[in-house]
Length: 382
Ligand code: COA
Image 1 (spheres, rainbow, N blue to C red):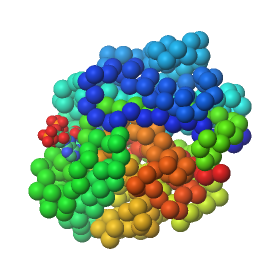
Image 2 (cartoon, helix red, strand yellow):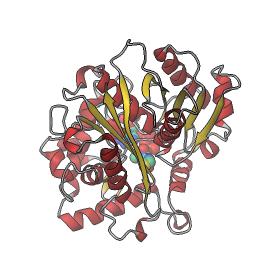
Image 3 (tube, rainbow, N blue to C red):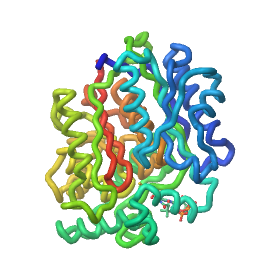
Image 4 (spheres, rainbow, N blue to C red):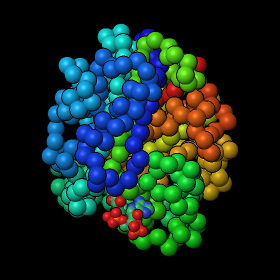
């Protein structure tokens, strides 16, 4: 594969955005990335989205968004891999540009969740599970993660309150991100008195339902030097059983471990070389499992890393540096692109108050389903 560079990035604020439609959100992020890249329209457009068919009664996002942003007659399509749709679309665009088929591509992640009542969105989210074995029985996505968290607590002896470090870190970082959904710091006491969503997951363990779009412009030629140059060092994906009941060991995210292993091998590095990790903290339990699966700590030790503040900006492995899914927000199909935009800003040295110091390599991992389809990307400062 040829070397692929990130030439431009764009993102809209993550929030309840009732003033903008799905295509307007996507268009705003897309045009920001195009303007940032200064290379005109891309040759191809790849869109990550999970639920526009159910939540917005709109499919055909490829044609819809190409037309809306004035990229007339360009090839354009959308890709779905549940909450991993953004990184799935990025990987597709990367393969097109890296193979030489296209010289440039724009990858957009977009999701508009808050126009629908919460019960409809909950029903849409659970389509990421196995309908016959999970969704059709009335389980929600929060409930599936609650089962995993309960099992984890049983296996490793943690209490629910021991997971507070993930959310405290995410909210502290989000305060400095103007695009984040939440700008409030939280304390251990706030975490302990947060309302229960699905025992043992409380409100501060969960990512919020929200709207947002982010975009990245990639190219096979080195950009003009306006920003510090960033390239893609690795891209890998792996799947696991879609239903959690079929996993030999549900406490291991096999697809996270496998995609990370392949990504480290492609980049020729190990976890200790990663200076920033945008993980998929849709729920605290996913944050713990991601840290363990990607080799940042031993199984069962994720909560300890957070409690000992090893995940802070100046810690061993800074995570959720702009708020993560918990506090920047999780507009599901857009999340993978927000993560890659944030890693790019870190490697460019443009991350402001939450800039990490060790910024040669950054990793983003985007999880679809309860760990069933996982995409890991490593970006490198050139
Ligand atoms: N963290 C912190 N505060 C939150 C929050 C969260 N995750 N979600 C909502 N809030 C706050 C809101 O800001 C609002 O505060 P306010 O009253 O001060 O304005 C209040 O809680 C109620 O917000 P609302 O939007 O009505 O919440 P809700 O009850 O409809 O939904 C959840 C809350 C947690 C049930 C919902 O966000 C959810 O289902 N999250 C998980 C989504 C999911 O499964 N994503 C896929 C993961 S892979």
